[in-house]
Length: 337
Image (cartoon, rainbow, N blue to C red; front, top):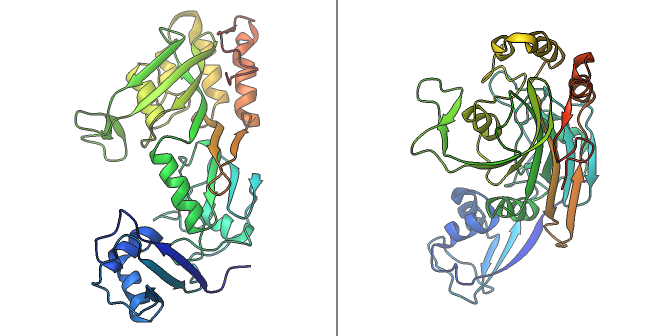
């Protein structure tokens, strides 16, 4: 059941010195106006007394906040099947299906992961004062695999901070056209919005630093099965970094549309066969490792390739019926070191 009002005891430390409404907004992951409203409603005490919005806590001050019950979300809860890998009172880990949009947006107001979670999760405590799930990191619509979802503000804040500190380890399985020059490659080039196509990202000067570690797992006739470990998490990072190497993701309609037609010689028919079997980008969030936001326990999860991608990989590793597939040092059967 959703929680009722909740009382929080906060202790000001080295982060003290700014206005109380701003300090509360940062500590409770809410807006300054909402924090100011709580102060005006008498929900906040500073060392046991009613404060003003402009008061500035000092180190050692105690702030008591009575949080209101979270407001119902304006989004509709929808009964949509979800593959939940792990769940407790703080978070859940799920294996997102390809084709599912994470957040409602213009053109996708229903049928999203958030709509599904509002129906499936009965003990949400709300994020930022609203009864909704806390998405810690996102996956593109056509990328499948593991995601973390927080159930309340504390878990969301702790996990988001861990993500910023690069303490959440994320590994993907992907198929890339052509063959990597080396079995292990690290790409460290900045990514930003494409200068002429706002729907795409690109390697651009002045973009945000992006680092991906690639490891060859299997060498097929005209493509490779690759493990990608994210050090940073920029939009389309793996897809753009592989494109920068000249090896875009198989099935990627944005960055590698009909790339298979560029394959020449005896491998042309094989490439067409793989493209026919991969109807969306071959990119899957395979592994997730992080510390539990409350207990500190190390958690690790793996999700095998979805049936349609595994079938394509099996066809490819068997050489498309010719038996010419080769395995890299990583081995497809155990892509995690």
